[in-house]
Image (cartoon, rainbow, N blue to C red; front, side):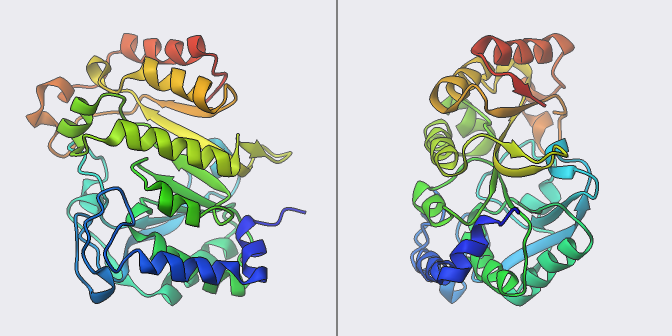
Length: 300
């Protein structure tokens, strides 16, 4: 019988201790690599524009995620408002940049998780959780006390603090990070994070250390492990070859990778000529071939 990782921590009391340690990161905020230093416990806001309470845009069963998450009844997604990245092409810019959403207390977040479980969702999928990890942990404790028992998914942009990720060891069953770029100049221009390539590689290693390669049940539904998303950008701006080599050689050739073809110019993308078009079919084919050449074989 599958028992989610966080239930073991809940039973030992360790989950509540993780909450306290995570909340301390908000006092001079270093929850993410921005390390803004503001006192979010007092309601101050840094780069992410979120203070003491998490914000939620929407929640519900989602059938557009990777098939191991969707299964038969959907992935129980909770879309969190704002982000610690500044991607100029974000397809969810109304949430990540414009701030569509509302503040929620831990009890409300816990109720959302339990409602999604009651609807049959195979997991609880936190979309853009990086900047509100302490707040999520507060809610997870409450939901675990009320018998939440499905896997938790950390669906993020990859710009993560390893210190914060270590607080999640044994809490999240599934990590689903983006691997956006391998070049610092591209990351700075398109996401305002010059150190993204270094940060994401360290974060991917830590995530993989915690959960390993993706494990599914007899129905093909994800139980534990890692799914990596790599969005193919025009003009090879994502650095696909280097990204795929890293995944195969530094993590595992069994890494489950979604090489994504759905880029389209959104938000401010038309202001940047190099990304003002969709990738050509040949560019996407080359990206898939780069993954295969690197030795990766679990491609979505």
